Image 1 (tube, one colour):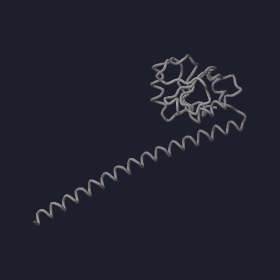
Image 2: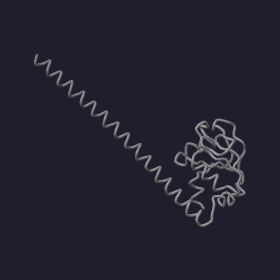
Image 3: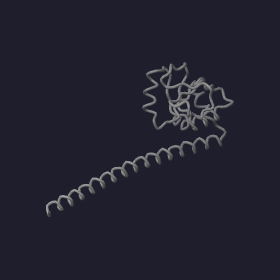
Image 4: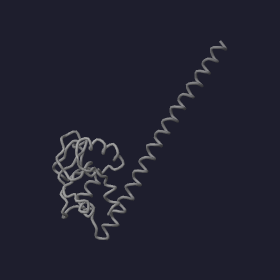
Length: 160
């Protein structure tokens, strides 16, 4: 009888340790995700802050594209940052020919021609990637499909 109780106790302790380990692993993973989200928001803050600074000086992102000789561009990632870029380029010589997004249905884009990344993409002088934190993987995927430069929104904004 005593041996059975000891086995139950050991089983309970081991179960408790396993549950504790799982809870610990969950919170460690959750903390890492939250830290990544915080870093992304900080990056967005600094990017948008710099963008506002040069806007207040009367500059626009169009100067980057003009300096590079890009007159027809496409935008990858139809999010709020894409909309800010489109607004910044309004009235300039830079033409946004189309957008690219993995989730066209949920896009809040203000552009009529949007393609999936898997589609055959029309010719453009350059493609601007607005989800710049994923630039490496997006750039690698696009470079196998197009023969124009793929640049990050981060590069555009910090170059003005």
